[in-house]
Image (cartoon, rainbow, N blue to C red; front, side, top):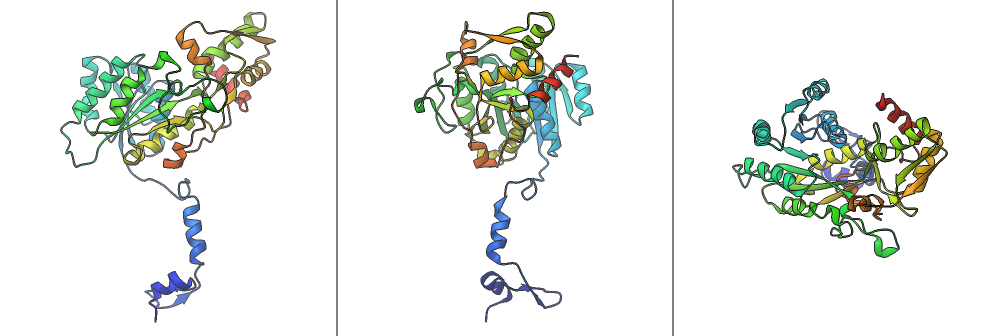
Length: 359
């Protein structure tokens, strides 16, 4: 005679009630298993209720602000570093605890050090412009957590990198790569990032993770806003209707909305132990043609056309370089999937948002 519990598992037709000692029909256990695992990462079935302490350096930046607010919405205690007292007030309105300092000075590091010592997640979204400052931030944090027990939980350190570290240019299969592949030497202008990312990913005192952001869009527009939207706006209002922008006819862009990228930061931060040592690309599943983007801008801006300018500097080469990569590691490890429409498909909304931010 099987026990009631075994009857549930094996025959799938009984439910045992301890209070009434009765049996009632039960869903087939195979179907029950399938339904419980089908969407294990979805927001409706799989939630984290942890209350972590998070410190974001660069909380007023285009990426940093989105990341900061995403951690707040996820229910965590969030500290946001900014240099501007007025921005600090705005962060307070969003339930972020502002840390006012210059993070690259010794005085500024002393300001955020007491917080950094006790956080669960440390996020570097600063625009360092080189390895020296970014390494200084990393080494300072490592010195702060040096006294933590070696066998105890480790803090998660997320460094915001860039997609150009993977670029191999346009072409056939030889140009395709993956998040599981090593960085490329195609763009020498960003070779310095290896000096930051390698020690970060290898250090045993932290759960080091790198998230390489792709071309950001949404709200004020970030790179797309500065390099395309603004010149198109000026050409439409003050010029001959033809705007100039950097690019090549075969350039394809990896893009991501700021909100979707921020969600990846949150998911990685909450899963630090299983994401340590990994490098993620925050990008939509499909790349977008630069020419499709420019034609969409012509439609919404009222411009007559555009003129492509060739690269003149190493960073120009990065901008026009194509990265053939379909991100999948974020989904595989955290269930992350972008939700926003693509850059070209949402052009009407994005252009309106950009104009509102210009006012």
